[in-house]
Image 1 (cartoon, rainbow, N blue to C red):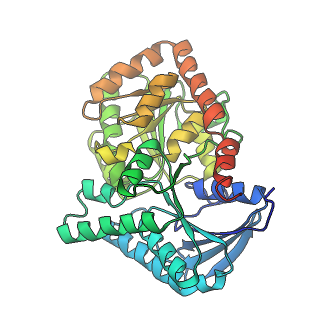
Image 2 (cartoon, helix red, strand yellow; image 1 turned 135 degrees about the horizontal axis):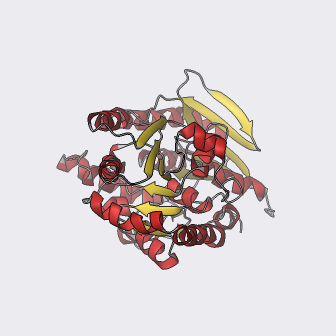
Image 3 (cartoon, rainbow, N blue to C red; image 1 turned 45 degrees about the vertical axis):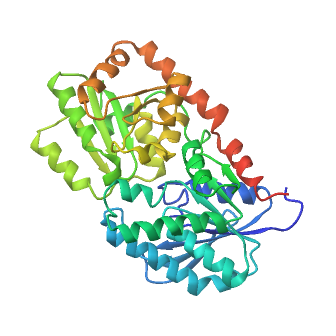
Length: 396
């Protein structure tokens, strides 16, 4: 337990709880703090028109009225990000007794809100970086104006410099931050594997029937269907698998901007071995993972997207599944080191077919990789281990 009273104000636009589903990292972090006796207040958003306050598992959560949808285009999303900052500026005075602010990106603008609170109320802040902004939208081609790029890179450095410390979700992100803000303390706190909620278990027949995957090797993607995820690659893989009459079924679970595009591609190619489920809550995701043999983590072929720490990777490890990725970077190295996954060529679906065939042919080979995935989750990424590492930042 914490030896003295500490109150942490968490700023995160996309704070979810297990009741709602979605990415739960910020909930895991908040829960890790409350377990150590630290008071936690969260400022987040919802799509309703009123301000709402609830208490969930000892976490005081304030929801501000800021619309956001995964199907929004880039500039509509940016507007939502700035609106969140504006609401925080108006609302944060209610929490001036906080000892420290913990601001979670993306978006980068959350750091601007933390910076304002520091200047206005003299409350120091820590800044968490899960994706490198503005580098990600720059590499994706969303930000092209040279002056805007210059201003955003300057803002990024300012936010890093003024923070007490920065928290990076991966080694490449930590390296990038240390290069941009020399001498700044940077902690590395990766995403977490919820090894108590997600567990390896035999496929349940009723779930196999529900998802229509009887006697199939199932490859699932669970997460946002965004432009950065390059999910057209899964459709191309499904086309090649169907052409070769392979016993594979692909499940794409989630919602986002490219949902309709993926459905159109599937219809045009008359694919019967791939399904879109839409958004699923946490329990439904667990059901999908029960019938799954391999978890796909997909990104467009851009260097910046290789630096992240995607939730779906850690869920796949926790539930003990073969991991399939179509990018390089630290996750590719880790899969090779721990023999728990494969990295396929993002430009060549036939490479996916070549690498997946040994797992179709040899169940023992598949089990070995799956067991190694679960072992990695338990030994390195369990909620308790990573949560304790995070809480130590605030306990002196």
